[in-house]
Length: 94
Image: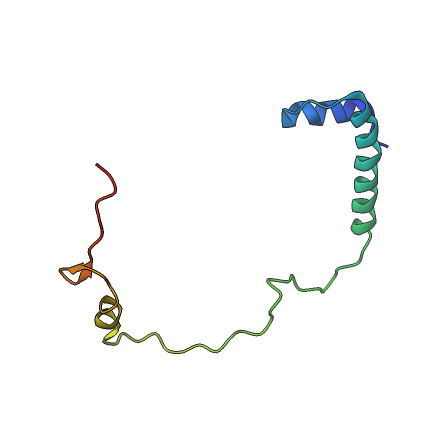
């Protein structure tokens, strides 16, 4: 069971102020959390591989090959103003 002194110490480390009512409440909550952690420590995980993500299969990969792109001309065609193959925008910092 977590006592009030421990809760005060944790609050001091976290640099937060808590009321007496909150101290009582947090004593119970922290005790429940630590009890749950003790339950988890008892679980046999021998031979269980760590999960590195929710998708275990890898996605399709294409070869990373450089290629010419005509996209710049298509994108700049939509620009209201352009200069030197770039978007021309109004100055926003003086």
